[in-house]
Length: 168
Image (tube, rainbow, N blue to C red; front, side, top):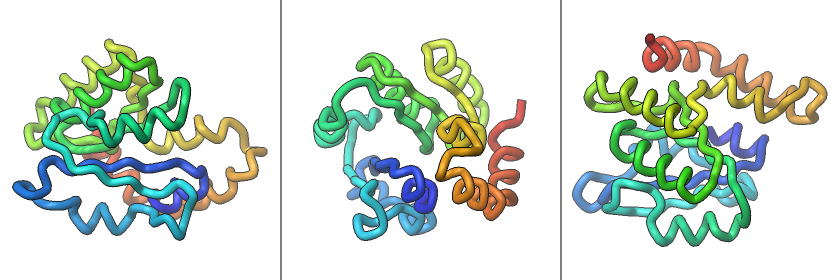
C-alpha cells in the first residue's frame, strides 16, 4: 500500500469505526500507510461513528480534489461500511472501484451478496493487480517498472488474498 501510493501518488484516506470503543487501526495495516514525509499522497485518518466513510471531515478533503474522482475502496465489513461508502460516492458522481481481494466481512456469506449489489449499482468490482495495470494503461508508462517490480515482490501475498477473497 505504501509503495503503491508513493509510486502512483495516490492519497489514502482511512477511517476507524469509533476508535474509542473498537480500537485504532491495527498496526499490521497502519504500518503500511505512507507518511507525509514519504509521499505527497499522505494518509489522512478520520474517526467516525457513521457506517459510511463520507463524514464531514472526509467530504471536505474530497471536495478539495474538485470534479469526479476515481476512488478505490478496501476495508472490512463489505456489507456495511464498504457498501454504504461506495453508494454515497456513487451518489456524488464518483467512479468507485471495490477491490475484491481487499474487502472482508466477519460473515463470509455477506461479501458476495454485497459485491454483487455494488456491481449492479455501478461500482467496478475488480482485483488489486488488475486495477494497478489498468491505472498504468501501457508498459511504456514511466511508472510501469516500479509497479511491475512491486507486483512481483508481493505476488505470494496477492495470490493468498485472491485465493481467500475471490472464490466464486
